[in-house]
Length: 380
Image (tube, one colour):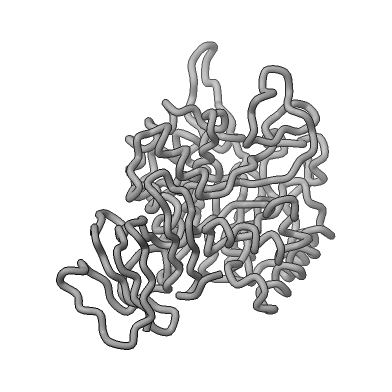
């Protein structure tokens, strides 16, 4: 048994100062205040030295780790995130990937999961292919532009990726999308769906909620706006995500508040509540120069047309930015980046400090500066 002492334990809704936590067999066995919790003889003692100890982070939406593309090199990509406190990660596909690239991703991610060399990989997040080609980066390169939703295209992709996909991003306005959703659920009954790169109307989104649509992909990014009358804004994806409590809102929180303006971040918190926000990194890799006016931006990628093309974030940095932009507490950001994403995907064995949960733990200072990572109770 291991005992972590002198820890500021971060639970899902409060802190335990001067806490102690016990680990046995990679699982949290007990925890509490040090003054009331005796340490059994023979424990391996880990002194947290006053650091905050919270659950490992859960990044459900990220395309790369460092310069490694997840769909090609999942093992080093996963290691990159694990070393930065992300103890669960979902490799994420690109909207513009061809059918052949989807098949390759299914093979490489599955092999990485089976190898044991990417232990923090727990499935995949499929950002497409059936989303609205009008939105997102590198739109002109999307091979699915104007392609219908037909079984002969999606069945091979489902065969390759369907059993490891935890989330499928879809455009609810796509004709025949329900046939694809039903086929994906037949492959994996507990799969979730996200409204992604879309200009769907609320009724189109809500029609898919009974089938498991419960996530808004990078909320307020790559979403359309319907104009009903001149100079009158209609309601579309962002409004539907805000309105429907069952839908979690993914947020990309960069240092400058470019993906999501800080005022919008605060507004979404007020509307959705802290139990329906999921921080993501949406990390990508690009070698294009920053467009004019953005030369000093260090944590965002841009495509060759100057459009935003994902981030250079890790999830722990996104947490720090969220604290700066919204005044969120350390308890709040652990909820946004661990408990909420785990709960949204039905990962009931992780995401919080509780007896019986996996001992995926990170040690951080008050600014979310990472000091140590334990995966299933062991140093990485």
